Length: 77
Image 1 (cartoon, rainbow, N blue to C red):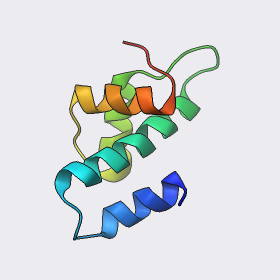
Image 2: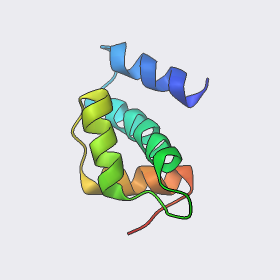
Image 3: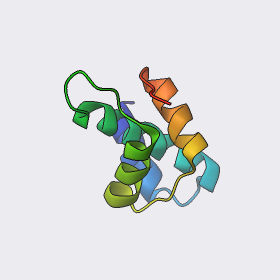
């Protein structure tokens, strides 16, 4: 299953626990933040937090954002 299908499923699946839902959505937000980062710059944890909040109405911690960025392969501490 692609990441975006996982994100959409996580947002609507009431059987998932909060931790699992947050992890899946955090990866989606990180991927969006990476794609939206200006050329030559890496996405920041703050960009992931903003994307999760504004795009998915989900509050994440900075550590969740950092971990998600590590998972998608680009991180700027």
